[in-house]
Image (cartoon, rainbow, N blue to C red; front, side):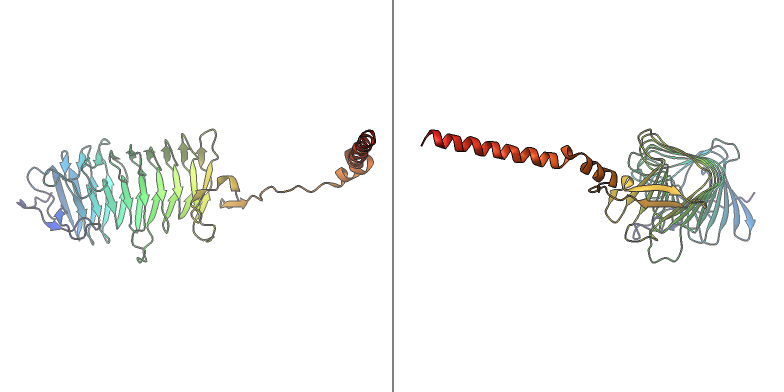
Length: 351
């Protein structure tokens, strides 16, 4: 065990990329171990570290470029730091581009969360993040995990949010000029949300092989990018299990391949909801949705019902049954003649 020297003041680093002029206090593996921190650090050499919680800790913990870190929650809770007693303008955990973090929980009751005063969610990834176990939760309108990195892999854990407006896990390409494709792989875990459980945004990719995904009001998976699903259970209590967003003016906007997954939707909803970004509306009723032999979602646009032409049988019936065609004309003719005769008789009586 390496006992790092006491740090009297935290290193000032730029922690929040969305507020580039603001510097806030953050901990890295170089300065995280200090008296009262409830954190210990093993220096494994070659810029590799093992960080272990020994009690509940309040940190803005950042893994820097070039660092490879394993964080063991060890049954304790990691919460972001409250700056000036008023705001917490950083995540509890941030992985910088070029950094690698693996999160484990050797005890089973460890938690990562954020304060109600938080500007950001519990975790933001710009590098490589692997989550093996732990509890990850928020009561704020933020993602529990926001991925803008090269790779987010979730192999297990429990993820929860009670936000009425924000999804649970978000895959996002914030910088459109970046060549990096935010990629997320989920191989297991339990995911509970009020809104979207997994939101795969435009220009991102997600692969799901297993896991339990539950949404109360919206969708267990909301896909605007490239999604490949080969397992797992997706449930929406009040809506469709999956929403696939398309752009009818751009066939390459998004794709969804799904096999061997269990979909549970509300009784009055289809398993797939279709939303067209080009017209900004739900177009589920405009498409017949199927999957091909390879699992690719196939959308067949339904043709609107217009005037239905008469069948040959109907034409034949009209010819054979004049009361349905010519008979009507005869009746109208007789009626006109009757009215004409009545008018002529009236004139004769009054002239």
